[in-house]
Length: 242
Image (cartoon, rainbow, N blue to C red; front, side, top):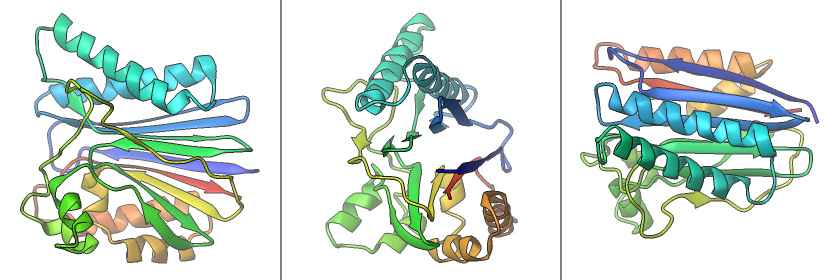
């Protein structure tokens, strides 16, 4: 298995970039993390940085096993709540989180909030994670279509995030799958996926010579579609398996 990847993060039109991306490679195992901080000012920036660093550090220490994703969500949530108490800012530090772990036998991912992971096979779109948001609930109920989420008036109404006390786990972890040649993954914050359709993601993928081409061409579309508007922070991680 040959794996290549590309990370990007940009503040858009905002003063501060509250997104955070990270990666770590350990003994031919890979971990990728992406978080979109919530709350404005420097609060989201603190939250996203903390959870990404905690998750990659845990991977650095223990590698990828069947418990990694759940431990990463639980431990980084605990650390984030501890940070809130220490700084006397209850519920101020909140963030989404997407994690992807890969080795030569298994691929696993999980998420919380409205940052997404997309899976493509042989340059065709297969699926994306389901947002923890009001519009996603409406899609699940058959009241609106998936494409309608991008412009829904309740688009920013997030139902779950890191940094809010859970009575039960709020994150979603997918069943592991086996790596295959021709797989591609895209992890991205809402500032990225709101400005590019799945159709354009796939078109860019079909034209791309490598993961860097794919990401650069998608970024061009995101920037173009974000012109003349208060563009949000946007971040993404692209992964190719060859």
